[in-house]
Each structure stands twice: as structure tokens, then as C-alpha cells.
Length: 323
Image (cartoon, rainbow, N blue to C red):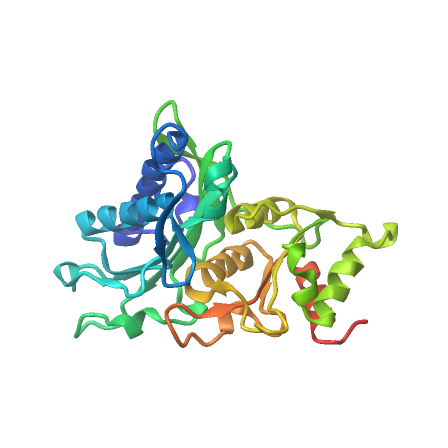
């Protein structure tokens, strides 16, 4: 009410849906605060659809999303990085026109060592008024998103979102149990001084990617180099740092796996929408992330994201236009 600009483009059902994502954040944050005291650390022994070992908190976070959205009637379909198939909710259709795609616990390798964690979400419309959506209706280009954002669990719990009218950040005040607008109309600097990348994969990268990362380390005060390396293992946390302070995050394709590792629908598309709305840029290294044609639910892509000028530099190296 005090900051209407933070709610432009958010009315009715979409506002309610975002409020329920905020509720999910409260519930998961509560579990995380107790993670070291109850038996929810470690792995379940199962392997998810991505071929990755399932952490107990991954499963709990995924179930939290499902329970909240099963009960509130605001979505007609749910798709998660942790599930092979989406959950369709015919009981909510046609009243509910939105579909939610999410990574329920980003950075789950950090769960056992008390490092930052997050969740990433994307909202699209069902696109049909005459029938229930199917699995294929969830496979959409990033430009079709109506809202996107992430939850961040660190020293504080935050909700960052966009509905196409800028990017706004809310911080959970534990004293009152509510989110307070803390970051209004976030703008990412056009160039930064930090980079985030898993350099353990250096020898798997193409020559252009290696040359770009080497370039960032060269001392050149005229261009603000060397950049400082900052990498937490949590995508949402690393992108959040760059969203506020500028710089670049890279999860590039590899010589033997040029398709990349990050999921287009659950990670790359929503973060690309957020960063572009804040004035930044998101790329595969060859093209804009939001223009990538979505072909399957668990499709993977490389991700180069952050300050516009930094991402353009990276693209030039990766495309062989700079040596």
C-alpha cells in the first residue's frame, strides 16, 4: 500500500500466487533454521530425474511447494526440477490459469555445511481456455513468462521477483513474520568487479571460455581488472550478489557437454527475466537465454548472466570475436 510501484502488474490471482510463494519461503526457512537439530540433513538414497542424489531437504522443499499449491487452488499445473513429470491439478481448472515451474531447493550441496540456499520459480499462463493444460504446455520460451523470481535463504530470508515491471526485493522480518519491501526497483550496474564460476571445470571448457576467465584475472586498472572471484555453489545466491553489485556469473557449456548443465525452465529462464528486468543480460554465450526454444521439460543450457557489458565481453570471447 505504501509502495504501489512494487506491485505494478500484480493484481488478483497473480498477486495471490506470489503471496503463496512467499509462504513457501517462510515454511522452508523454518525447516532450514532447524536443519542441524532434526534429521533432515544428508541424502535420501534416491536419484532424481536429473541423475543427481536427492538431499533430504530437496525432498522436503519440493513437498512444501506441492502441499501449499495443492491447497490454495491458484495453479492448474506444477513442474519441479525434482520430478520427472508435472503435477496437473484439474480440480483448479479453469479458475486457475497459472502454471508454476520451480527449483525447490537451489544449492542443495550446501545443506550439510550451513551455506546459502535458495529456490527459483517461473510463472506462465496455461494458454488454453477450452481444455486442461498438458505436460507440453509447460514447455515454454522464456519470453512467455508472466512472473519470475527466487527465494534466498542466507543471513536473512528474501523474496526477489518481477512481473515485467522492474525487480523488487522483500526481506522477511522474523519479528512480525512478514515480508517488508527492502529493495525497490533494483538495477544491476552495467559493469561489475566480481565473477562467479566453478573453476574446477576449467579444463573442460572451450578455448574461448578459458580465455575470458583468464582475461578477468589480468591486472589492468583502466578496465577495472582483475575481478574478484566469488562462488558459493548456490545459483540464486551468486546471481543475487551480482544483481545488487554487478559482475558476471558463468555456468558455461563444456567441450564434451556443450548443452550445459543448468535447467532452462527452472533456473535459466526465471533468472534471465529477473536480471533483464534489472537492466542486465543473460546469454548462452551464443544467444539470449529468453529466446532459446524450449523443447523439453528438463532441457539444459549454458548460462552467462549479469552486468550487460560483462556478458557482452564474455560472448565476444566465446564466439571467437576477441582473443
